[in-house]
Image 1 (cartoon, rainbow, N blue to C red):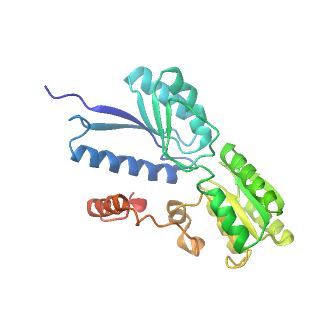
Image 2 (tube, rainbow, N blue to C red; image 1 turned 45 degrees about the vertical axis):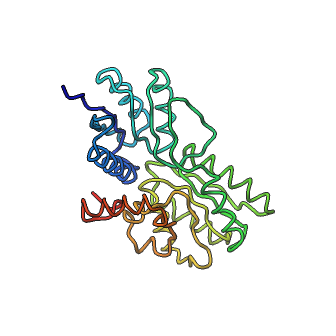
Image 3 (cartoon, rainbow, N blue to C red; image 1 turned 90 degrees about the vertical axis):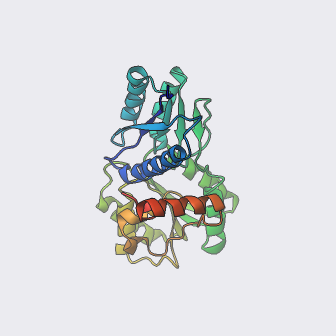
Length: 279
C-alpha cells in the first residue's frame, strides 16, 4: 500500500494589495514541492499543496488556517506575506499546535515554537542598507511606509541607526496599505522637495508601491542624487510597476550560491522563464 501524500496548506493571496508578492512566493513553494516530489518525496511520500486565497486580508488568513485544520486535518502551512497576516495566524497555529513556514522578511522581535521564520530581519537588510546610504548619500532621511507593523518597527530601528550617526529624521509618514492613492504619494513628493532629504527610506508594501515610484519619477528627482532606499522593493514589484520606474534599482545577486544557481537553472528549464516572472 502506498503511503498517502503529505498535505500542506498554502496561504497565498491571488487577489488584493499583496497579490503579486504572494503569487511569487506561491510559485516558489510549488517549484520546491515539484523538486522534492521528483526526487521521491519525503520518505517516499509526495507533498501536496492545498491552497486558499485570503485576499490579502489578515483575518481571512486566520480563518483559512483554522478551517484547514478543523475540516481538512492539516497541520503544516506555507505562506502569509505581511507581518499583520502572520500575527493573525500565530494564535491559531499555537492553539492547534500546527506549524507555519513564513517565507518573507519580517521585523523580528517575535518568537513562536509554531512558526519557522525564514526571511531576513532588519540586521540582515535595514542595518547594512542604512550604513551604505549614510556613507554615500548623507543622513537627512525622509521615511515613507505602509500603515502596519513591519514599517513601524523597521523605521523605529532605522531611526535608532540614524540618531547614532547624528543624522536628522525629516519626517515619518504612513499611508494605508490597501487604498493609498497616487495623489497621497504626490503630496509626499512635494514635501520631499521642500525638505531636501539625502534619501527616502521606503517601507511601502504591495500594489501602492508603484504609486510611490511614479510620484518620485513625476517629481523629477534624480536617483543618483536623492534615491529611494527600500528593503521591501523586489524583482516582483519592479516587474509589476514597470522597469521604467524601477530603473537604477540595485538587487543583490544570488548567483554566487551553487544551490541557488541550480534551482534557477531548473526553473528556467521547466518553464522557459525565470522564477520571479513565472505566472
